[in-house]
Length: 429
Ligand SMILES: *Cc1c(COP(=O)(O)O)cnc(C)c1O
Image 1 (cartoon, rainbow, N blue to C red):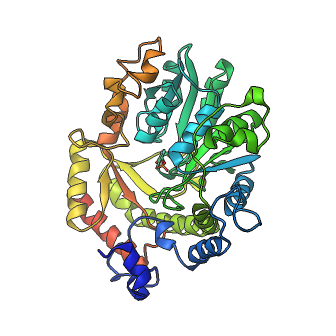
Image 2: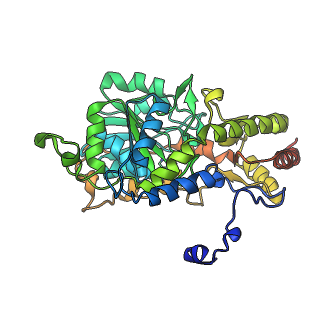
Image 3: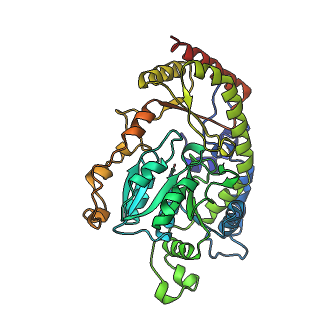
C-alpha cells in the first residue's frame, strides 16, 4: 500500500480505484453503500471548499454559506425537522441528543441489548447509566420489556433502528410519555428508512445519525443530531461548540461549556454530495433486496427459516436480509455452506466471539469502569448489575445476516440465489 501522499505527487491517479473500474463480475463489491459511490461529485465539492479557503464552518478566508450549514438545512428539510446539528461522529450526535434531552448523572437510559457499543458509551459520557432491554423478532427494542425495565430513575429510551428497519417508536412513546421519559432515535444504520410514511429520525423528540464509513451515506466520519425542540437544540449547540455562547449570543445565565465536536467543511462538502445520492442508493438497495428475496424465499422456507419481522417493509432501508433458523446448529450449517460458496453471510452472535453489537461484549456494564473512579455508576442509586437479555441472545444465536450492496448486479444475485438453494438442501429432512 503506497502512502497517501504518493497518490498526490506521482500524478498516477489512474491507479486510485474508482467506481468506474469494477472487478470481475463475480466479485462482490464491498458493502459500503455510500462509500463505494464516492466520485466526482464529492471530489469537486471538497476541491471547491479548499479553493474558497473556508475549512471552518463559522468563518474563513472567503464569505459565503458554509457547506456544513447547507448540509444541515438539507438534512433538516428532508426529515421535516426544525433543527439539524452536524457533528464529527454518530457517537457525538448521540451524546448531543442525550445532553439535549437533559440526561445526566443519576439517570438511567434504556438501550437495546442488540445495538452498538457506541450507544452504551454515549450514555456513560452523558453521565448516565445504560440499562439493556431485550429486542424482539424485529431485532429492535421490545416495548413490553422496555416497560418492565423502567424505574423511577429512567430518563430516556434509546430506540436504535437496527440494520435498516424501524423500531416501534410509537409503542415506545406510549409507554414512555406518561412517565415523562424521553425517546431518542439512533438512525446510524437506517438513514433514509421510514415508518408508515414518516422518515426515521422524525418519530420522537430527537435523533442521531452517523456518517461513518460503514453507514448508508458517508463522509468517512461525521454525524447529525436532529430535533424540533428549541431547548434541546440550544443545549446540543453548546455541547458541540465550546464558544457557542458567544457565537450564538446565548444569555450568560444559560451558557454551559461543552467540547468541540464540530463538523469540518471538508466533511460537510462530502456529506452534502452524499445526501444527494441517498435516494438513488435506497432505490437500488430496495430493488436488489426485493429481487433477492423472491429468489431465495422458497428455499429458506423449506429450511424452516423465518424472516426478521419488519414493522413497515416499504420503509425498510433494505441494507440487510436477516433470517432466523430453528436452531443455532442449523444456522451454523447454513452459514458454513454459504461461506464455502463465497457468500459473505455473517452470524448475528457467536458466544465465543466478541461482537460490538451485542451487550455481552460491552464489559464496562459488568466492570463499571469509567472515567474518574467509576464515573456515572457512583451517582447512580439503583441496582442494574443483574440485567441480562437472554431472549435476545437466544434469538441472535439462530440468526444470519446478508449485507446488501446497492451495486450487486444480476450475476451477484444469481450467485447468491444458487448458493442459498444448495445450502438449504443440507437442512432438508
Ligand atoms: C455506527 C453507529 C453508531 C456510532 O456512529 P459513529 O459515527 O461511528 O460514532 C451509533 N449507533 C449505531 C447503531 C451505529 O451503528
